[in-house]
Image 1: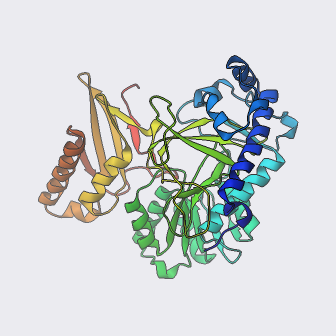
Image 2: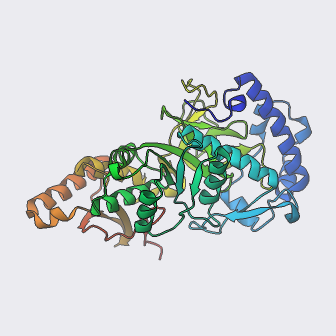
Length: 432
């Protein structure tokens, strides 16, 4: 089972803790001296970074949030002068003000190392031809994986946002062996391949590395079966570094966090209390090698838990559960909290596969209403109405049992819902 950097990925826990402490001390001194937000914050709480002697001292510092970063737009959170920043990237800003991040030359080197770990753990080697279907631009996915793949020595096809049919042509003609994109893009690829009658045997594809959005085990299974590949998950967010924070190995039993670069914590998202190992809550990350854009105790909004259970791959890093929920993905309907993947699970159980779907939220007579739009195969529309009615009733029953309310169900023809590189699962019209 491949390990890209055995020196760090298999480091003894005691040595790793010492390395983390040294790097944390350097980072805290850096942000105190160079980032006005942290300088003012540390003074306000009487926190002296020179007094840090244990990792537990980190808990004395308040959390950094997305609102903190938005208020600092564009460059006030940078810890180096702009002349030392060799690259600037950002989030899409779909939930508000875009978040601008910067990288020094050393940051790019660390990022390349981290994505090489992700790709290596997913089975990518110098013998692979990897097709990168993430956008190349301000979004971090494309360039992040590109540099890591080149570090490994793989042949890189930067197909980026090419039309899906062209992606398939490239995949066949260039004999792509590894694919990296969002899971929803991979699912879309499966649909088009089936429509065109292209079988997995006609492709050279063997492995897929998917991330940038939550996805279910049932969807993983479908993608693996439809493409005849092994699919692994990976996790990253732009504010921290992009892809490369954590990754699955071949065991697929949790994502290894590169703790030589990040210190993870789990907190209660409502109270902010730090939770124990194994308890589910919001992931908080402190960067300890970032130069241009270091963040202390950053609330990611992602819900998971941590585990120190050993792994036969040999890595000693803590593992995080795959992210199935995000605080900012949470839907609140008439005071009740729920997440898109909970609906996806119901739909998969009823239909027998993971359909393309969308949740439309609106308000009527001061009450929240939910319409679930679901694409079903064309055969259903030429079959008896009983089958369609049965599907609708089963979905309503599943939602009623889990959430105690009745949604509206709208079964629609294939390709009705617009495809995106990153799926837009929820449209909320209540506040428009």
